[in-house]
Length: 219
Image (tube, rainbow, N blue to C red; front, top):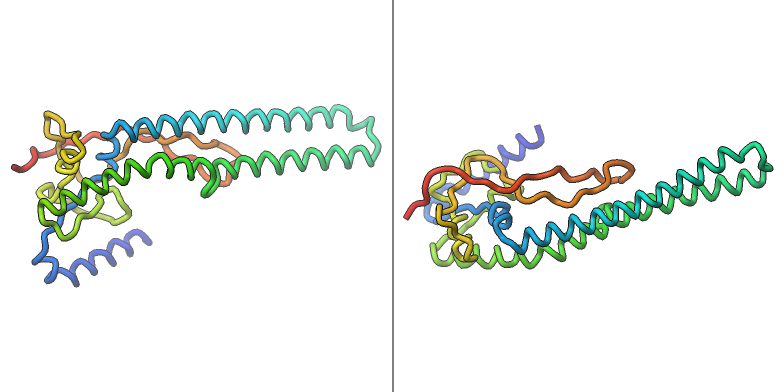
C-alpha cells in the first residue's frame, strides 16, 4: 500500500508538471546494467566478496570459542562454587557481547563492509555519472531518470532509453548494440555475503548478471 501511494504521488507530480515537461526532452538510463558491464565494478564486487568471506570466518571462529567456553562450563558446573559459577557466567556473557559487537561492526549499518563497498564502487559510479552527463549534453536532454533507482517507473518506452549511449561513452558498446531491457528491474553481479544468522542486519540476496533483450536501438 505504501508503495502504491508513492507511485500515485509520483504519477500525480508527473501530471502536474506535464505541460512544462512537454517542452523538454528526457530519457532514462539503467545504471545497474551499465555498472554490470564494467570490469572495474566486477572487480570491486569480487574484492568485497573476499573481504566478506574472511570477516565471516573470523566471526565463526569467535562463535566456536564461545561455544567451547559454554560446553566447558556446563561440564564443570557441578564442581564450581557459586563465586566461580558467577565468574564463568560473566566471562561467557562478555564473550557473547564481544562477538555481537564485532559482527555489527563489520556487517551492521554503516559497518566496515558498507564503507568498503562505498570506497570501491564510488569511482565506478563517478564514471557512469560523467558518461550520463555527456550523453545528456550531446542529446540535449533536460532530465535523465535512473531506471534502477528508487523512482518507480510503471512503464518505460524504449525510445527514451539512453543506456546504450552511456555504454558507448564508456567504451563498452557491444556488437549486438546492447539491447534495451524489458520493463522491470535488472540486477548486477552477486554482492558479498553477509552472516545468515546472529546479525542485526539481514543478508543481501544473491543477484544474477545483467541481461537485456528488446527492440534494436534507434539510429
